[in-house]
Length: 278
Ligand SMILES: [Zn+2]
Image (cartoon, rainbow, N blue to C red; front, side):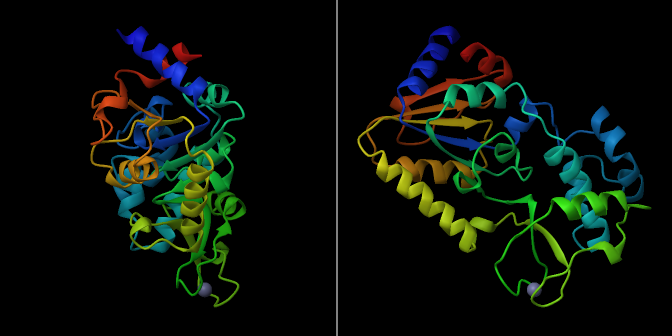
């Protein structure tokens, strides 16, 4: 049964002129990053920060520090250096890139680690619904400008002592002088900034350009409660006839309403499925 489903997915991707991707924690987990667990990677790479804050996993660490900018930068810079700058395409991303080839593609992700861009997706074709550690914004929000974070991430991570970064090394806003912070915002799509609106527009234009042709949606480990990614995907293909909607999810394959007859569900290990798809 699974072999037949994978064959159908392979065929849908081959025939599609546009591929839309939705990604969430499940994609990172399939590639070995678990932000919910005190696993060996966490203890080894975040142990010094955990000792200070008591956080039991990466997610808790990132969330626990929001009231203290020096601790917040410490968790953010460490996470960015390891999980974004230190990332190499893994057992899902590699085959995904190969399967897509030169096809038009657009990705919507709630992951903040910018890995789709690291794996070769152009920035204009990735919408990060909760922001990304690859960019910074003014902490006073005087402008909507975003600034690249790589230099700051490396410098600040190297400055961490007793769970905090060196305050004198935090870059400041060129307009108002307030400290910059990583461009993270769980509710970004409730109040999208100019850049997010531009990406939504790019997505609309892509879908228009491929009107009447085949579209495949690949949902990669998006939890059933991640409404934002699912809704944006469903909205992008609403009313289209030639859509195949593929849901990859380890144990929780849920088909979006209205697309049940055009859905393919692939449960179990996503990395294994992608190896087989090649
Ligand atoms: Zn400012």
